[in-house]
Length: 143
Picture (cartoon, rainbow, N blue to C red):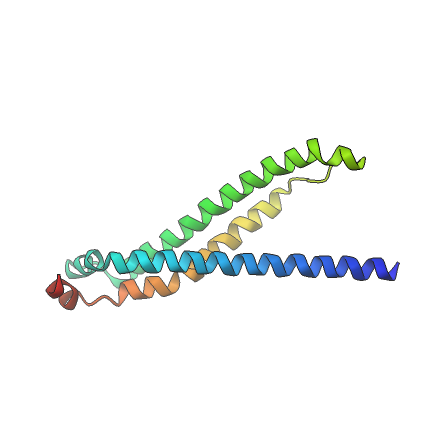
């Protein structure tokens, strides 16, 4: 019994490690994509700053883009999980004499959505700060 508990604990630990690694990769991806987007839109941000848009508004815009990317990814991932879970229950579970292997858990999906938004906002902070640090005079002079 104790060996079974140790194996189960190792499996749970491995699952959490994989979830953490996946979240880190997702955060890096979002940060990289937004960083590149901000770099390409320097003139746009400089123009917005020159006409009086506040740094806070630009920061909120870029952070909102990061959150939107993560929300769409969470919704898409949840839909894929539901489809693949249904397929698993129909195709694989009967082979093992089990009725259900996958059970949809709405609170888990809600938690996933919240975690995705938090990861998006955190990973979008550096690109958002870069967008707010654009000096309109310098950028528009070079343009």
